[in-house]
Image (cartoon, rainbow, N blue to C red; front, side, top):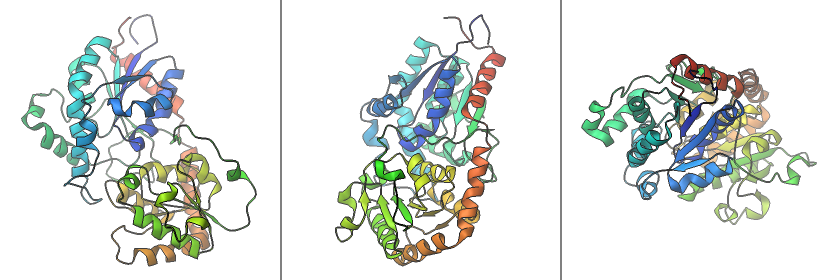
Length: 387
């Protein structure tokens, strides 16, 4: 880095979604451990999640961007068309852009880092002539669809943005290479480290078991809050109980069907990265965080995808022999889930497939190596400004 100090100023810009922010946390802490001043810019309503990760927050966004961007409306995306969902995140970027621009002008960071659906940080980094690092949370999203969504929201303004649509200075990729999409742009390989926020580890988790297989059922946070996956969760619970499993549900007990509520253990918030280690199977919606957290522990999975990148995650699990995909829209979803549970639990090939991916994740460079690469990027581009 230019100058006499090796302490850089890094501004991370996080989309207000736990599944996008959580995978960034190990990298951000590695950068802090390397001596850098790391701060996180998010819409004000998402600040609590960043604070619970122990990171300093710079809140910036119109307060109603939450209502406009992340709640379902008339354009719910599917896993065959990510553009509607990407459009929502582009609207968040539009809401954040004025305050983010002002923040960068005042704080003068040496580098901006943001997740792959961000548009605002890329634009502001270009204006400030500092490196921009893209941080994936899992599978790479199609670049053409990302820019299509940005154009839908920003229109002709995109043409006036220097560097709009250009490749980032560096892409951090925590997805194991064999799981990543074949057409993904190359990225800096880094180990996926599960982070799920603060939680108390329940004593029963590592305690003695009665011999029945333990199945974790989780369908994310936003989707259950909006009611989209409640029926699928009920089907998954019923299928696991039919197979004679001990069932742990990561959801409010009110979302568990009354007929089976007394036969399951419902816990509203669990540290997934720890729970998966003590389970024989995870049934979920196909979210990247759930998928990769379970793979970190070599746990087989059944994915029931409905939207965004969930379908690709479910497909890759099936293709690599680490799980089964049961589409959310399947007419016989309940029957398919009931059949899939004993299949995955009883066939050792699924466990072997999951453990192969676990070994690949464990062999990936840790976040400290990623922090070194980002430090070298700032050094090589000579953007460090003396305080």
